[in-house]
Length: 173
View 1 (cartoon, rainbow, N blue to C red):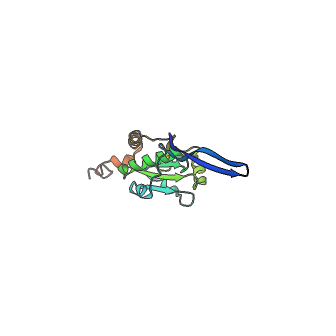
View 2: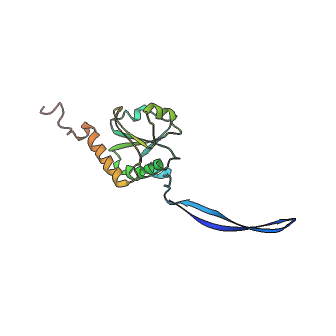
């Protein structure tokens, strides 16, 4: 939704034939009430989200035994920015459970192609180097995102994370 303030400017044009007064309406200020703010670097680091591009991408990131969510986004796409903003708020609560990676597709074109990203925002779920799920489209509701993250964690968490350390091959010795 856009809102603005209209103003009226009056111009006086003097020519050799006389004076002509012209009133012109113009938009003085135009603001968007729906445009999401970009997340700050401090907020992203507090949320424990890694930023990658073509220069910094490491395949070890998606080869982790921790479930890794790679979010492909673009700073010029409002749905992407809003998704990253909501993800930044929620990610801190999943520290140690899920790993979050942001991939700016403008700076990471080769990596985006390599991962098969066709649209933004896209979220790719990896564990042990395998693509487990892919979701395309904005997630702008924090409660919905948290519910989805909880389901991802429950569905794909490492089997070894719940194992009793005493239930190993040396039990009973």
